[in-house]
Length: 226
Image 1 (cartoon, rainbow, N blue to C red):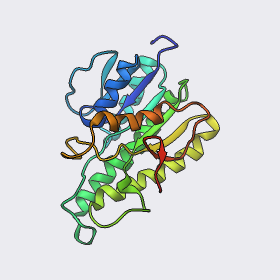
Image 2: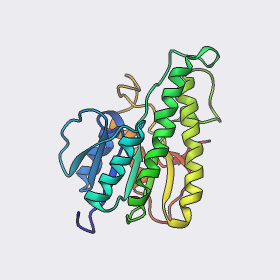
Image 3: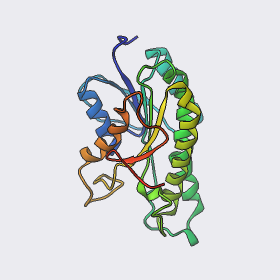
């Protein structure tokens, strides 16, 4: 078991992009980070452990939840980062619903099932935070046409954030959605801001004090309209 003062975080979809950068930054701070991935992952300096995890597979998620309890006994932070299908090639009027289903399975239900599986470990943690990596693309206030699978799945993730925040608030577990902004990653494409800046937006929600906000939607520490 880890030392009692060591903080432990799980980051899903952490083999590349924002998830990998969040992992790197947490490890550089001295956190023990569980790098959740369904594929191979690059080596990261620090106390980083690869945790096999396919967020769209019930058995994989259940096994990961048990592994966290067996190896570490607790979890302090869960970052639900795994996401797929930034479907710029689609419009809602004629979208391939198979693609939409796949996006919902990972972007919404993946975060939901991982949260459920990790709650036993989170309830034993000390710095208990759930951060759902969302997007302004899921903001109803500014939503328009295009990217239907991605936008709808992120709007649903925001709704889940509100539900979980209300239910877990009595237990002192903070649940927030964090938008990293348009970031130059494999998913975001060229032209976005550096991945370190996007990761910092996510880490702001990780670092919240115990009396910090819950049930909010933020980018760089500032509220984003729902």
